[in-house]
Length: 454
Ligand code: FAD
Image (tube, rainbow, N blue to C red; front, top):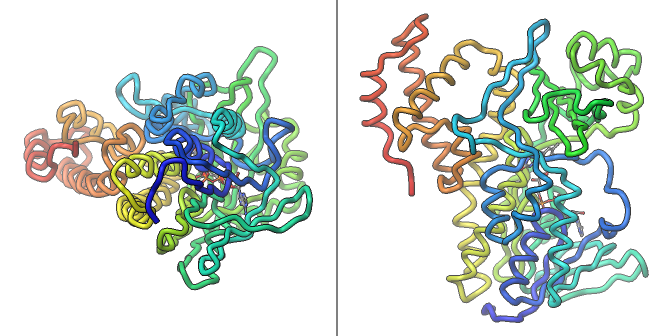
């Protein structure tokens, strides 16, 4: 089907990606119908226990800027300059994320950001937002988007072509494509779960340094905490489901407080209602969703978590979903057919999303374990020196992912692997010395790393 101005387009799911995408499409003059199963978030409190705050970085910011939204988003953002690492029996240490003032990431409340995007979407007269509307899937041969209106209890259909499904990690549209044999889906669950806990603000303000992402790395598990604008922090415990130190062992409520006192002695006093929160807040699963293809001809495209949910350890799921929106919007400038647009989008994004899915899993090891390793910390310090000396060639992988949207995820993964080989070679040569050989570094970098991609 050809792409025409004012044409009706359906978007399923008014979460982070769906609401942003609806804005971008409405701005281009499409008649967008946005279907959301939840009630209107402007009326009432958000659902509890679903990653209350998120790290926003350069890729997400670029997409929000592209949509002209950054001025409204900025007041929701709290700068996080690095990882504040809490080891047992030692003072907390800040490991900066980057070495330039702008190389920071931001904590943003999911509900506030989602509400803002929905408010912005509703400014477009041509955009119809239907809350309390559950999508049951896509009937591709019948060209029907299957919907259920919770208020009236009525099932009804809307034309399917073209639909973009942004209905999240548990996507009903994806499941319907899978049932129809139009997509193959592989879910790769992690054997670690998470639980969110709130560290309330103290009488005099924040109880932790507000401009940092706090980590309590404990090798097999970790606690993290991100700041909120009201001075509170949202902490998340990541722990194996079963095993000697696991959620299973904390099923006995009398184990929870001793576990926190032993493992997180400086965080435990900040959680006076720990046992009650533990009982109240859900224990949630994580995993990676691999789907192929992401589109069915010109009928429907999966985007964001619906196509490619990833584990949260690089803080990139939302950023990648926003980058999806940015990419699709840019491709709309050059494509005349929906089927070709969806195919182009998939071609441009697939390798990149596979790369961030892999890096997100790898980052779990870095956060809970490697930040405690002296060899890793020494290599990180060297990487910063090398970046200062060769800023156009050597950029730490974390920085490429978080601060350099002009470098694709796939390129960050590829260059990161070469850089790691260089650091390993320098380490081997240096032995126990804290210094590396500059001549070798210069040679390796100039011969193995091209200038960074434009
Ligand atoms: P969602 O935000 O899940 O939105 C889906 C929307 O579709 C929802 O509004 C939902 O109600 C609606 N919906 C679902 N099913 C239906 C249906 N059948 N019919 C109609 N509507 C439907 N990412 C980051 O970038 N940084 C982070 O720091 C970060 N931290 C995270 C921490 C945790 C613990 C988790 C779990 C995730 C984290 N993420 C983070 C990932 C991020 O939450 C997701 O990648 C992001 O929400 C994806 O956006 P989305 O719009 O694709 O999906």
